[in-house]
Length: 145
Image: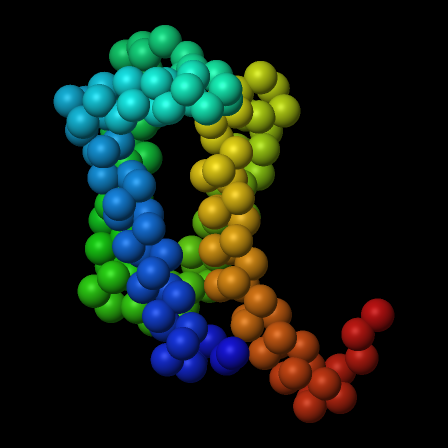
């Protein structure tokens, strides 16, 4: 799949829908308090552990993240472009690293399913760019070490 292919743009749009659905509840203090309770209850039920106690700073960071991701999601749903897939893939690499860091330092295991989705969308959105780059480098006679 090439980054300009319609199938790639459908992936960019799908990742936007996923993010919108998953993070919309993080965008306000009232909805995040509900999401926090649901994640804690779900984590305890699944044996993945509860979320840490809700604090004002945790609420602030969750709301900041939720607000930015909602706007970024709407852009990818309404106007998916190849560049949006590249940038989203890069953001998912970073976000995956921070989720893995949290998990490695005692974060709630309820993060695991989200980490799997982040890595999956990151790979699917970055792989076509890496292939296109490798193909272009080969055509231009650039040797790869």
